[in-house]
Image (cartoon, rainbow, N blue to C red; front, side, top):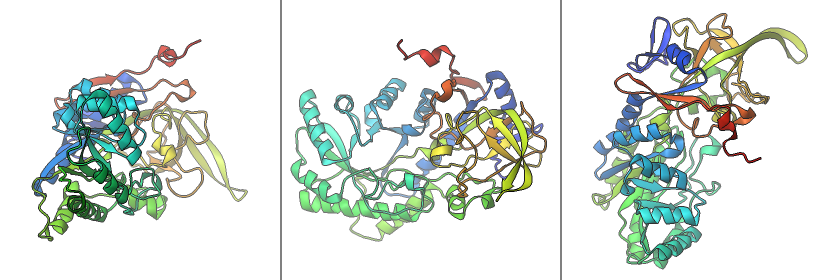
Amino acid sequence: MTWIIKDFLEIENNQLTIDGVSAVEIAEKYSTPTFVFSEKRIKHNIARLQAVKDVIDCKLKVCYAAKANSNMAILRTVKEAGSDLEVNSGGELFKAIEIGFRPEQIIFNGTSKTEQELEEAIVWGIYAIQCDSVYELELIEKVSRHVGKRANVSLRIVPEIETATHPGLKTAMNSSKFGMTFDDALKAFTRWAADDEHVNICGLHLHVGSQTPNEEPYTTALMFLVEKLREVANETGHQLSHLNLGGGFPVNYLRDKSLANAMNEENAELFASDFTPASALNAAWKAIAEDENSDLKNITLLLEPGRSVIADAGICLTTVRNAKSRESKVEGQVNKTDNWLLTDAGFNILLSMETYKWYYHLISAQRADEAHETPYKVAGPLCDGGDVYFDIEGHGRLPDYRLLPENVEPNEILALLNCGAYSIAQMFQYNARQLPAVVLIKENGEVELVRRRDSYQDLLINDIW
């Protein structure tokens, strides 16, 4: 049972326990689907990121990426763990302020900010607005003049750094929608002087992509930022205060490798990616330190981790609602019988399983200690042929079958692991399905309801008729 994580995901009396609490008892109390998050695991993951400060020779600012999961109790936990925050909308900024983050703890990313969002960020006086283009910088200046307050800005640069992640998660290439060229950035530094009364360009920002499977891009990216920091100082006189290396640190979704051979090699390598942020930044810092001209003691290094904070801290509990068997055919010949399990957790609450063919390991929460060797076709409840736990196109991006104990029948409770990132943040009411409950297991073992399950009335809340 290589998915086991000591003192977090374990087995007791044949049942999955999360921080010592029975997953079956949670499902029985709150029904399913229900997401379960571990406060202790979230804080452990943030401490793992903050360990980067031990391998660099400058100040560190870890900003959790709220887009990965902005539930208020999760944000509260992140704040208690000593992390700052990265937001991507006026809504996330609002939630950040509501939960108690100070403006100087907040950075604001995004490609399409509205004037209202920029005004809110400037009035609050946040640490930095990550500017995506020269046009946006002009918009920031306009809003700054209007509100009569100087805006703190960091320029997002496209470094043209290739990574081996999923194409939709590559953000450091000109083919992606993010950022500006360095030539445009230099023009911006020239146009908006260091003493400009409306715009304070104080940093450079990049992001190599999410679930980056190896360390090398971080070394390349940090060296790129340091080189551009020097160019900016030499050519424009701007002395910047911070460099933002983004996030993208991977999560090992294949701790249990029983199905690794059932997906294509590229995806198996992607989902099995596993290195520590401190290791990646240590290698990067050593490469920088070899250059005796690199004095970064007065620079603050920013990181924007999302997935690596919240993914493995979240589990989705789901119930088998239907089971059936039928013969399948290959090239017109009947060759085997498929056992189907239909659950109550579909891509309406696990969108990445459809959009990115993302892999979440599936186990029986009720019979966790039994051999998981029987193959099943598993699918969700939606009236949509794509709502399945495998790749219907047959490209091997997901296993064709999931392995569970023998004789799984309706009403058995299953658990999808490592699904805390981009799940409840992206869920939607397709088929007029009520959005699920979310609970947080606190460090003292208390199970706290942090999002109630939708009622039918919630489905109507914004409709007008």
